[in-house]
Amino acid sequence: MKKLLLTAAVTLAMPFAAQAGADFVEGDKTFAGEAELGATLTTGNTDTSSFKARLGLKQELGNWENAYLLEGLYKEDSGENTAKRYYAGIQGDYKFDEKNYMYVTANYEVDPFTGFDYKAVGSAGYGHKFIDNGRTFLSAEIGPGYIYKKLDDEQSLALGYDTEDSVVAHGALNFSYEITESSKFTQLFVADYGDSLEGRSESALTANIIGALAMKFAVIVRYNSEPLEDFKSTDTETNMTLLYAF
Image (cartoon, rainbow, N blue to C red; front, side, top):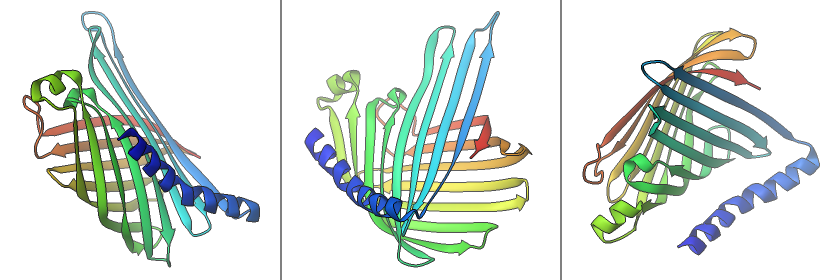
């Protein structure tokens, strides 16, 4: 399985590398990104700490629009780790024209509080931009995919197996609206349907403070229709972070 995942990763990366090499020679490239950071610390009768960090990068290389995302969440209460999640994702969109494109995406997530050591998802398919007028953006994607999950040691012993995998139908909906020149609302839905339905929703409101610095309020909901025993089907995360665009 590790060889299969490595082969898939190399295959996904090949078109990006080839196109990148060609476009770097031509000098036709753009690059932008956003970095977020949020933290809470309390001491005294209650000792708690929580950290949220996120780095998103976007790159245009000829007909390719590439996006890279890194996220990390860590929370500790009275010396005990109560939340930990790490996420890495990459997506490449090959534009056929201004509205239609082919996407290739892969992500890797570590969240030990779900009963799994990690989860990896890959998908490729068709995307369409319904609205893209500078103020409002709406796009949708659909295609086949594959999900692979590694159970932790406790769950492996209890269930008698250590991995779960299935072919899935992958769908995504991405919406953003510029409320004013200094504020913006974004909504993202992602779903993978195979042996179960797994989805992720992120609603966020961003308001500029000064220059490239902004404040972001986000609500993230994760859903699994068939969680492991003793685990809930829905996780929610609400956070306030500082965002710097570059």
